[in-house]
Length: 249
Length: 297
Image: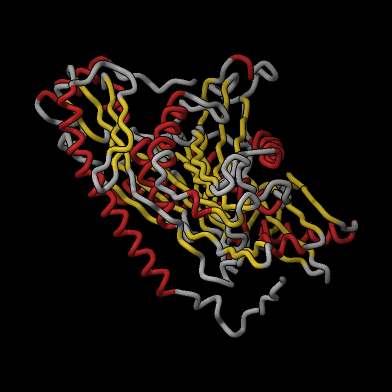
């Protein structure tokens, strides 16, 4: 299975950016984060003691509609929770996350938006890391489809997703806590539990948590997991950013 | 925040005085464009364009719809440009601003109203169904001159795009998938492009393809829309200080040269991309071990 491709800080104008391509589903997303940014007074009235996280999803070949607003709500709740909005300089400010779907099939109006959710989540996370927004944790997400035969398919293509009986999106924090559970279709508790376990192993690889909560990753499997992929992408970026330092040692 | 950071007085003076000595910030001559880089994505009509640090993605898409009541023979063509906070922190998501209205208007006038895309060829069945072509412009990095960049990208996209084949049989419209029939290119009547000039020092100095800083220091702009044959299809002196009439006449010649140059550059990358696609061809789709497509009619 071909893993996703991602790179950080490609854009000049925004504070942080990331591009993410998932070959399995065909989606290619570009994310930009601006923050902390000054917001007009009307929007910070709700929670003045912390930063306001705004998410905007821009579809590739249509104008944004109900589907985009719905998915923005999900993204905002996940990404907003992990931003440390009370850090110095962040209260009463905004963190604006813009995600543009620049490649792949369009999600038609009324169609299922879950297929693109993991890609959007990862792009948002990587862009926030690129913008140095303080985060309480990182996470990894995955999409699983259950076929009529009861098989679990990882990252189903849009056509396979349409044929699936149920679709599940899970996001796990870096410490294996369940952050997001979005499911659609017909399924029972057993199926859900089974899918959750599978999702956890995809996201985190074979991990062992020690008593103090630190996660020790197995050597070979870490890079195959989604969280390993996120980590490696960021490591690569840091490595190239600090190349000048490495050379001088 | 909803405004670009303003130029400092020192920066403005520097730009203006440098122009008096015929020097620009990045060392270009007054009539030079920044390096232009066009590439295509996997799908038809997916253009990635870089003009210096201005970065644009255009996606062309097609769907079958009902034509308008008053124009039953015409298909639909729309250019959609929405600025998001990705391009510049000064742009707010989901709100229109002046630049958006300005750029949309220019694109509409140059490409749509000059009939660059023959909308009559988009008709499938009179008054019943037609193609609706949509060009979506995503500005992902803004460093001045989005009108020219967007215009080049949309025109390149229209020439690159292939729509699925559709036929009428017994009064029914059948749209063939890309795997079933070779998709058809759009009917382009001519290739207009915009060339934007900025004027300085009572239009003594006129430069082409200004960066954001040069745009901010400018006193006015002139937009000339033209095709390779030299037909001027759009000319505007939108706002700012009055421009010298002779400057407009002289710069029209410059614009023509630029349009010919850029159209040649588009043609070159188009041919290279088509050659690449022809080489790969339908090799993947025509493998014997693929699933058989069941034709539903």
